[in-house]
Image (cartoon, rainbow over all chains, first blue to last red):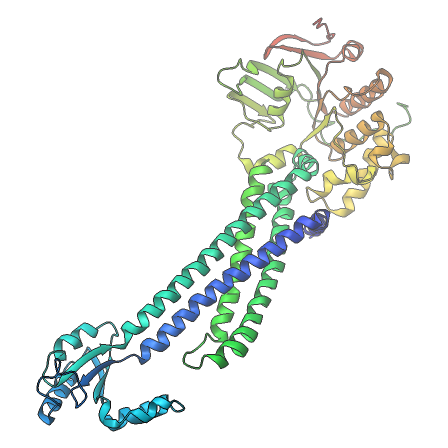
Length: 303
Length: 249
C-alpha cells in the first residue's frame, strides 16, 4: 500500500511537472478519440440507414397499361390472364420472394397524391397515367436478377425495377464518407500513440536521475515504470472522458435535435449504439495510451 | 571522530571471513567485436569482508568491471559468481533483488537536488517498498554513521562536496548491503575531504562489508595499504594484498 501511495505521489508529481505536455497529451487524446468516435458513429449511421432502406426496398414489376411504352408492351394493356400468370410466377418463387402485393392504378394514384400533396404536378396526373404493379419484397435484397429473369420478359410486364439500384449510388457515396471518417480517425489514433511515446520518452529522460538511482538501489521494474504508465492512463482517461462527453453532445444536439427532425425518411442511431461506441472509444484510448507508455518506458527504463 | 560514532550492527559481521563472495572466472567483455575487449579473461576472487582497490588508467576496464558486478551489463564470456550465484545467468526480474545487496557510490554523488538529506537517504528504502516504521530509524542510523545528523534537513545544494558524498554513502549503506561498490568516490574531492571519506569507507568495511573501490587517487591507495588490483588493457597485471598505487602513467 505504501509503495502504491508513493507511486501515486510520483504520478501527481509527474503530471504537474510537465503540465503543458500533459495538457497537450490530454487534448490530443480527446480530439482524436472524438474523431474516432465520430467516425464510428458515421459508420453505424450508414449501417442503420442501409438496414432501414434495404428493409423497405422492393422490386417493382410494372404492368402494361394505357400509357405504357409500346416497345415493351406490343399487345397493349395487361390482361387478367397475364396478370394472374405473373402473380402465380412470383408467388411460386419461395426462398427468393418473401411477399408479393398488388398495387392497382388507383392505389398508385393515392400514393402519388400522398407524396406530392402540395405540388402542382398533381393536376396533370390521372390514375390511368400511372402503371399498376406488383411490389415484390425479396428474402435477400440482392436477388433482384432472379426476379427479373423470371418475369422480366413475361407478356404484360412493362418493366422490372430494382429500387436497390437507386440506393446503391447513394450508399456508395456514404461508404466513401465512412472510409474518410475512419481514415481520419485512425490517423488521429496514430498521432496519439506517437505523442504518448514521445511524451513518455521526454518524461523518462527528465526523470533519469531518479530512475537511475531507483535502479541502483534495486527498485523493481514494475515500481520504476508504474508511475509513467499510470500517468499515461490518467491522461487517456481524462482525454477519453472529454471525448465521451463530446460524443454525447453530438448525439443530443446534432442527431436528436438537428438531423432527426430534418430528415424524416430514415432512422438514426440510438443511444444503445452510441453508448457502445463511447465504451469502445474510451477503452481504445486507454489501451493504446497504456500500451504506448509500457513499450516506450520498457525500452528507455530497462534495468 | 572515530571514537564518537557508535559501531554499526551488520548482518554479515559475524559470518565466516575469507569465504569468496565475488568470483570472476575467465570473464571477458567486448562491447564491439572490432575493438580490443574491455575486459580480457579476468580471474579474480574477492573474499567476504575484504577491502579491494581497483586501479589502472582510464579505459583499463575498471568501470566495466563494476558495471558487470552491478549487473548493468553481462559478460561476453566467463562467469561472475556473487554469493554462490552466477549473475550472468540471472533472470532479469531477479536483478533488482540482487542490487539490494549492493550499495553503490559514484564520483558525481547522484543525489536528488529537490529532496532533503533525509529524503535522499530514505528514497533508497522507499522505492524498494520498505515499511515506513523501518525507514525512519534506518535513515537516522545511516546519517549518524556518516556524521550528518545535524544537516538532515538541508538540500544537497547546500552541502559541500564531501558532505554530499557522505549522503550518498549513507544512502548506499542504509539498507546494510553486504557489498559496497565505490567508483572514484573521491574523484571530485580535495585531499583532506577524501581522507574523511576513506575513513568512512574503512569503518563500513570494518563492520564486515566487502568494499570494492575503483580509484585514480594514488595518495589514498598508498595510505590505506589494502589489497590493490591493477588493471591495464582489460587484464589484471598486479594483485597485491597490501599494495600501493604504483601506477606511474
